Image (cartoon, rainbow, N blue to C red; front, side):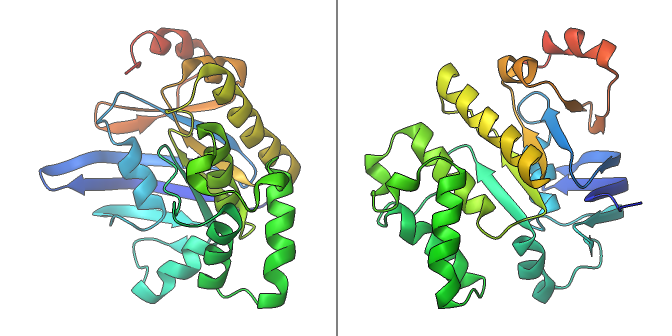
Length: 236
């Protein structure tokens, strides 16, 4: 049986003022599509940052993409992050470069051979539906196109896991639907696991999948019967 891509057991995550999340125990399978929901400030982003080793774990056991986060050494962090793609709400693209160069920067930084860079970029841009935008400068793209570049950047290293932090937060409903459909398609076509933090219950309802709920200082995995009641209480 394949090991989970994420496995947390009785994990505690803190910030400057003390524990933020405690007794967090969850698993995400290697090909799962999972939403992480909860009010602002409950720790969703902190959890995602912990999973890609941008925050430390105070207590418990945690494994992501085969890496032990509790005993992770600094030199191992780049190796972990090559297995993880990250999609941000505000895109975080290099605005002084075109789309192609944004992706080439990632590949060069992660050790790809020059001969392999161009075909990988072309393949990835085609996969996210913007093959014709390779030479476009970032400021000249719509927000939806910029998020597709963000998804391409997350996908460019053939990750085992994509973490998306409010990927539709800056988008209109129609564009949000397109972006969420793209993430669903990537999950189904490649088997890349997805953990998506979101407040967008319209998208959750349209693209239904497993939910994790961040509330009361921990994370729970509700049954389907709980979802409708939580929709009314966990909006921003």
